[in-house]
Length: 313
Image 1: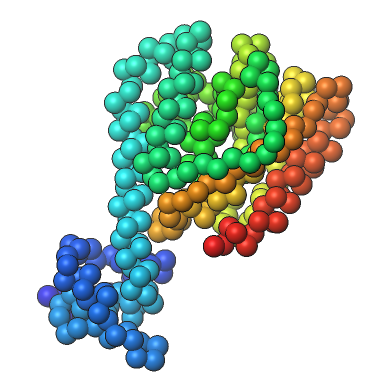
Image 2 (image 1 turned 120 degrees about the vertical axis):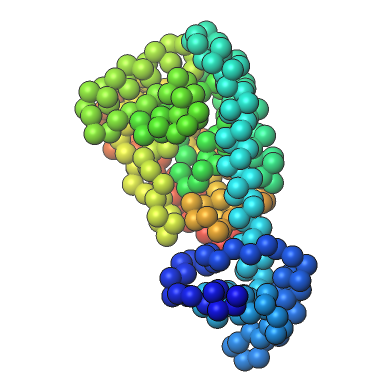
């Protein structure tokens, strides 16, 4: 039985996930905690579970507490996907009604806000907002933020007070259930199609005329984890200038640390958000777009860089 667990250890992923899954028992936890360290090696009790621990740690170089944390993260991440999927599935009959007409969008947004706050709560996240910025609830804004996590959307919903519409990639509509709701309530853009990009401008104007704000992650993608902030695309700034609406830069400090795209990473805790002063676009022309974009990028980048040590804790 032990030898079966020894087959092809070299095929185990390097990022620390054991291919062989065994039930978690008191004896297993005991083996983890009672392993004794001599020099650079960890020695475990001469039991089957101790042998499995030895296999994990010698081949994957995991410390006991790292494996315990990864077991927690496995269930924690599964908990996240379960809540996202089943809450949308459960609410789908109601959502079908409220997204059937544009006049119901404010009601849909309230439901979305409640959903976003619920997901953050059950995952153990607490938004902490800073920035003494007064935003008029009767005005439309262009909200932008750094994009580093699956929970960015939930975090935006939890902190934005003005009913807003997301602009996102067309590929998102392929997601089951969520994709259907996203397609009906957001503005989708196919970046490979010039015609699609033109249509986005018309859709944004329509939403602004309805008194809604716009939310865009201007990086256009989630950058690699070693990248603090990827280069901004032009779309958000062109639209803000053309429609003469203020830009509201927001810095999400902790999302990469708390819930990055690396599966076995993250931990519950605070999600700090700084809302920066608005960048006004009244009287600004498209010729000044690059300067406006650079100003927004520098604002968020400097905030992230100045807080880099806190993000590592």
